[in-house]
Amino acid sequence: EDKVVQSPLSLVVHEGDTVTLNCSYEVTNFRSLLWYKQEKKAPTFLFMLTSSGIEKKSGRLSSILDKKELFSILNITATQTGDSAVYLCAPRYAYSGAGSYQLTFGKGTKLSVIP
Amino acid sequence: DTAVSQTPKYLVTQMGNDKSIKCEQNLGHDTMYWYKQDSKKFLKIMFSYNNKELIINETVPNRFSPKSPDKAHLNLHINSLELGDSAVYFCASSQEGGSNEKLFFGSGTQLSVL
Image (tube, rainbow over all chains, first blue to last red):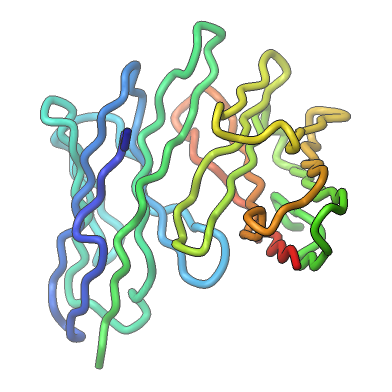
């Protein structure tokens, strides 16, 4: 069963467009949700969200979490070719009574920005 | 200094061989992980380990075993390699608790089994 569903799976836009990437999750003992960007190698961290309704921003990127409806969105405005990457979301949740936490990734959204 | 380093970057080997991938983190984190990323780019957790508990994803074959000589290292041993083991393997670490629990990833090891 997929705990994390991202949509769309792929997206092609022109430079300057605005995109919205979606992430829905279903986990118990939720703690936070993280967004990562993966280009050629290792994923790089974008945002960590713990509270509903509080938008986090970093330049042209922003993200928000809805813990009631169990989803998050990542917005990118005025896209550039350098934004081309796979965007991954991952809820962090308690795995066992020992207090261990896991991060489970969605399959990602592949964004391609064309000039 | 690289926060999470793993070696080798590339590993090409024959079916049936046994191999190891090493991972070290210098962040003082208490939890380390191994992830496998297949050809479809799906990043799937294999193990998470801290000084209290090893959590194994039940879908991981027992040919894969993590070994942690100390808190800063989590190595991955793979026995009797199979073609389907070809993938990129990422090591990661994090610190539980606090407001900054993000994962820091190593640069990955691309394993090719021939």
